[in-house]
Image 1 (cartoon, rainbow, N blue to C red):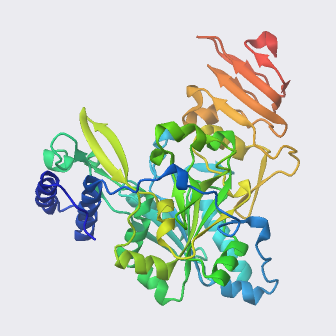
Image 2 (image 1 turned 180 degrees about the vertical axis):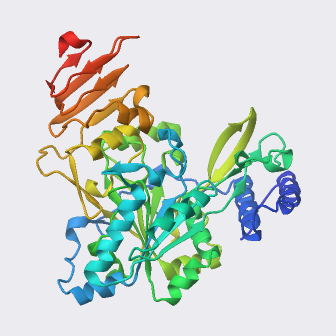
Amino acid sequence: MAPTLSSADAEKISMLKSDVATLDQISENEKSGFINLVARYLSGEAQHIEWSKIQTPTDEVVVPYDTLAPVPEDAAETKKLLDKLVVLKLNGGLGTTMGCTGPKSVIEVRNGLTFLDLIVIQIETLNAKYGCNVPLLLMNSFNTHDDTLKIVEKYANSKIDIHTFNQSQYPRLVVEDFKPLSSKGNTTKEAWYPPGHGDVFPAFKNSGKLDALLSQGKEYVFVANSDNLGAVVDLKILSHLITNKNEYCMEVTPKTLADVKGGTLISYEGKVQLLEIAQVADEHVNEFKSIEKFKIFNTNNLWVNLQAINRLVEGDALKMEIIPNPKEVDGIKVLQLETAAGAAIRFFDHAIGINVPRSRFLPVKATSDLLLVQSDLYTLSDGFVTRNPARANPANPSIELGPEFKKVASFLSRFKSIPSIIDLDSLKVTGDVWFGASITLKGKVTITAKSGVKLEIPDGAVIADKEINGPEDI
């Protein structure tokens, strides 16, 4: 159904169509996808959520992980399961916020291994153990495509099929006159944007990869962010979905105070759907953030049936909520419209959430997260990052590092070695602080270097429940 537009907006769209028609940098699929997205945005068709109709999902809809049936012991049965699976990592993000050039997935996480190395090792281990062939797909953006192709060459001899495809490339819209920024003489990458990971479904189909995998008998794709170290293949989940014919599954996990802004699953008019903070009216935001009412949040680990993706993309049925993202490029106000993959849940049949352990959500968004995963809090084997059972507290320590630690290179140079944090509750570091080797941090630690003063923590220091403002406090 075409969105209904006012005559002024219909005029805008028809002008935009002629502008976009001349953009030879993008395909016809991308042009029509973009125009449809803008038309939906202008028509204001966004679903209005009535707060009083929101219901907490039952255990049938959001299934507790520990109620899933155990996986058959039989290796031949396991191989049969895995031969139906494809793993897809969202690889469109750059490492810029962490001061790195190129795709974020090539930041070294531990022992000189990058996110991508770990993902490849995990799937190789699985394929070797069961004699199956689980392929890896990487969805790149135009920002990461060229670099990723070079990086993937190093896995040429590995026991894993790696496929890459690009998500769509859409023009940024100039707010003032609704023209593409690229037709205003901006020929740089800044004139374009990737429209969010909701684009994974049409991009997967348009790339030809979806059809190829269906013809090989593949049935499910496990989609996850490439920077989530906890997003590993889980046989119990896969087996449950195949047995129960669930077309879509979102892994959710209990909220902590750090996750209050994360999207949550609700039951709404008989369907399970994602509720994001952006859809919540101001007067309900505090309630949305409450851990009592909305106890879970979306990890963006998604399991989706391939036939269902094919059916819904072909029928142009995936009309996820549009997320308007205003930006400024060289002083020009632009708009980019995006969608999220999790919001697609309400279009699939028998869609469920599974409430998984927190260990399946270990994203690395900043150097404070790198500190956690490089420390003795975790161990690494066969590409799997596992939490050290020696830590009693189920929650990770909260870590706040000042701007001096923001870039990976500066972060690494400020630690001779990563401290032991197995008994740490919280760490806050401010100012020009440098850590020696073999340091142990316990309890609640605050380290503040006075302005203009370099503060060095000596080798072997043990700091427990202390506030340090200078060498005399150590």
